[in-house]
Length: 198
Ligand code: VGL
Ligand code: ZN
Image (cartoon, rainbow, N blue to C red; front, side, top):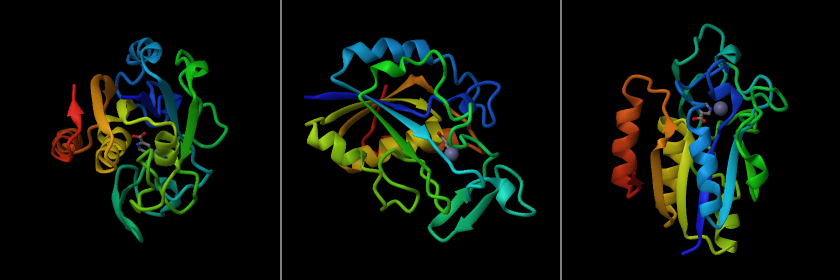
């Protein structure tokens, strides 16, 4: 099998001190770097929002961060402003071995729709192009790591399984936001979708 490492959103805003910090988000970086030489391809994803993105609570008067609202495409958690295109918060963690990446795929760049998954925007139908990239390179096996376990890793892994990739999530190389039991729900959902949790 041809094996790719998919590194989800290891960016400053998801690390301690960032706008949407994931506890211990930075401790996974050395382990992720160590996996890179063991695979056939390395893909990084980068959450990449225009200023004033519709997923930001600041765009919705009277709404606080972490509130759940209904968008035309379904439910959406509102977030603190984060990963604004070109900002330091949107940059990869300084220790991540970005030079090893074959592809960097950006997501969440459309103002009116969020994109947790590396494969589809949050309408679950608009593709990012990653599936085509992987298939045309003959990649059929994925190992997924990064931030956050219960949002972008979860959605990406479930989509990967649904698309027929053999997918393993390395939980030791992921960290979670964990809003109201979202981590337990994500683990259950990934397992049910056929994601191998390691
Ligand atoms: C993410 C919330 C908002 C993630 C991205 O990478 O898990 N979470 N944008
Ligand atoms: Zn985001």
